[in-house]
Length: 153
Image (cartoon, rainbow, N blue to C red):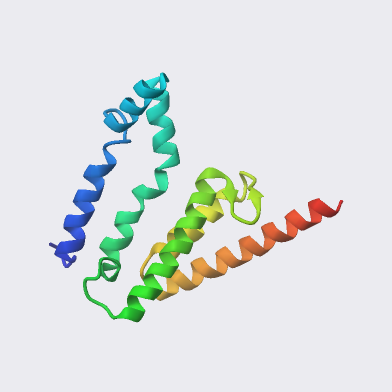
């Protein structure tokens, strides 16, 4: 399996199969929800994909770091990978959706940097984690400062 963990690869396949419930053009889960709610099926499926876009990245995290599926590595490896992935997912979602916890709405110009920080935090390599954490910290501090400045005047 090209040096990849077999369990992680199998879980990747199962995970992506599950995502077909919200992925166009089939999206049976979204279409059923649209029928129940009396909404347009294609618009509902597109909204489901947009809202769920972050979950398309998660399987890549555990293929590249098998400790996330408890395959190899130590407890500290798992905890480090899990915590950086959680923070990465928060920043990735903030970049995609335009809303960051504690800050609120985020301008379009900042959103790509949030996505980059989130992806870097999800990469299981200490240099990428360090760069991603630094970028995330700088962005968060900048956005908090900007929010406080706009609240004052």
